[in-house]
Length: 72
Image (cartoon, rainbow, N blue to C red; front, side, top):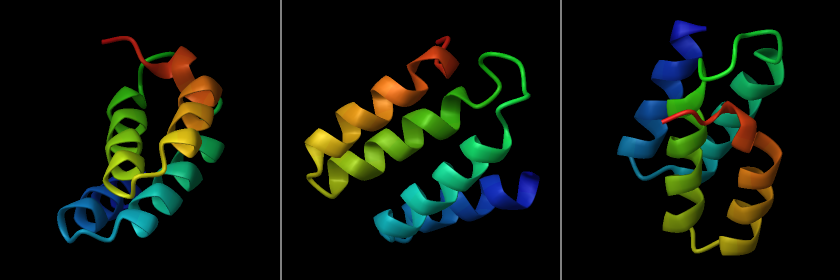
């Protein structure tokens, strides 16, 4: 899991926002058994990537899907 998180952050920092969203989505699909709030930063990073891509509608859909994971 740590490698996927690193990949997500690296994609974002390299302005590969599509890769960031894709990696974050993969993490969140496989982490459904994790406790609430464990993937909070991943969700927020993916939202920032959507905003950077100017995909606001997709960002809202993504937020609606994973809002239960955000605790901070």
